Length: 330
Image 1 (cartoon, one colour):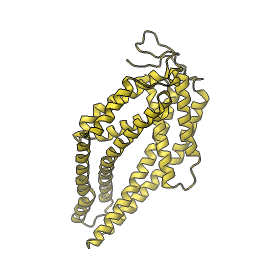
Image 2: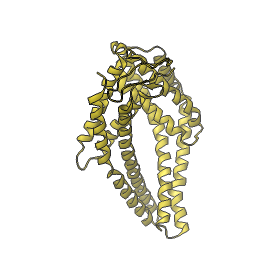
Image 3: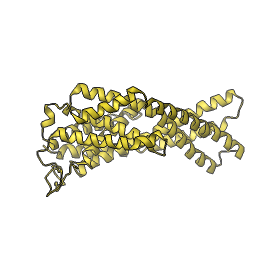
Image 4: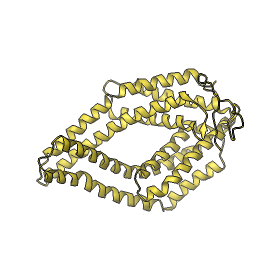
């Protein structure tokens, strides 16, 4: 049944019991129960998307990967209520699954970025002829789609291996009989609010320390921290665990904003690199490559435009983190 936040003050973030709300979390709800409920909800969404992802239905694999990341993020943020060794093992196995999904998803994204770039290039008159456009489409879309299909087939085969079955069974076992620590019995709003505050300060600190010309590794670290903050905040502010209200949702939105900005930036940079590799291969085969270099320059320009939005997104994150720290339950 849902764990619901009812009639909480918009200022203090505390939980108050609702009238006749089945499964409502009152002020004495324990942290362990809330975390397990949040994890179980994500686990259930994962299983709901699994058949569609195996069938390669649109967006299903992306949703599956997102829910794997949600599981890992919730375990990282609130794992102190569970045995540390169990959490470490679960996160390691889920990371392996995430890598398997990532291999397929990266190719899927590359095709999507290429499709959009080709439309833009065609409208801008980048191609000398329809034949040139079709040749470039063959390189950037058709070849990559074939690579995606092969990678997806390998992913499907891996999910039938004993190791793949065991990692999902292990997750079910842990959620069925949680190895709680002492912290699991603590008051959920206070204990989980403290742990969410840690995640918010961690992400805000990375944003604050970002240099004027950040490296790709620094941007990637900020993106990961922001993504983890988003999923940690959503886990305790959305059904079935609506423990916190507007300020937690503001943290989720701020993390999502940075994740989107840096994700779009990364996608375009990777596409530019791919274009230049494709140009090198085409040149070796004696083909014309000028248009590939122009497309790479266009991708670099789009990446720069995305990165220009980071300052505002980072400011939003710092404000949301500060508001949560000042008003979280204590």
